[in-house]
Length: 220
Image (cartoon, rainbow, N blue to C red; front, top):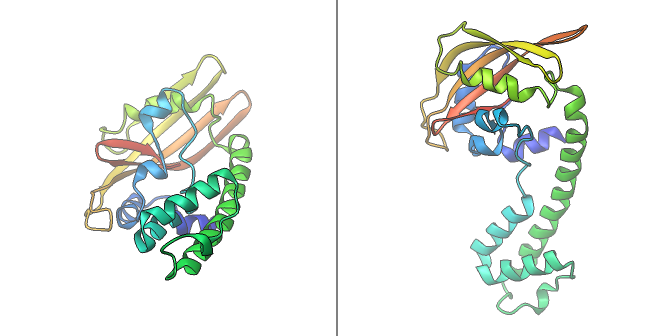
């Protein structure tokens, strides 16, 4: 299921120690970073959930509108939103391409159900398996914001007095893509070494932050 979502969203595989490869992969992908990551400023303000996977049904509707006209897509959207059964044979000006348009929408709806189920399962376990718990992530993000312009090897400690947790983030070298991919926008990525401690619990891991249009996103 993850492979399907990754293919649909254009999310590249994470590289533990290759920010340059990651930057290039993100630059040549079809999705802007705001659809796959959370801005560090947003994380630092307390919002820790990321964007949902793309809406396959709306994508299909856009394709149907391009192929058969916006009126057809609008009627399909209304029928879908109201829970009614769509009878494409009853739509005017649908002699050509009506069946294929309807089949495309049905297929997208079925795929959307699978994506939504996978997303719900992922969200249900995300907080329990995250390297840094949600309540502590804003403090880590605030520390990272102070490091984004610092040289490689720079590190900063953070702590959350409310939970008693603390950690250290270390920043890697900045690698910038050529910006000549489908996005046509340069993307700069930096590897992050993350350390977390809370009482007897101590763990670490590797993350990635990337900048697009002057905004840094957490892609960990």
